[in-house]
Length: 139
Image (cartoon, rainbow, N blue to C red):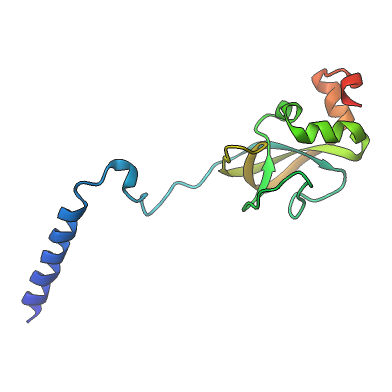
């Protein structure tokens, strides 16, 4: 009886294998144990004094599992958020932190990140001066 059940299971496995042979590599499910994302230094400009978790700008229409951030701080200057922030530059700060990238949405400002630990906070005006952008363009 046990042998017949084993044979039945083997036949089903072989039939399943034959059914899935034609699948292209793009439709093969991912491996069971996926590699965890690495922590890296990331950047986020946001209102002064707020924590990373729970703050979403008024310009972020997407609902994501994490927060939006930049891989390089200068990416801020190529966003719609910058157009808004530069009008009230003294109300914002640049946060440097460690985090893990979890998504790269196509039409978004930056990447989606799980923050791990804040490294530093500096006023956005000071950051703009450090990278050499003329303050006339910032205010």
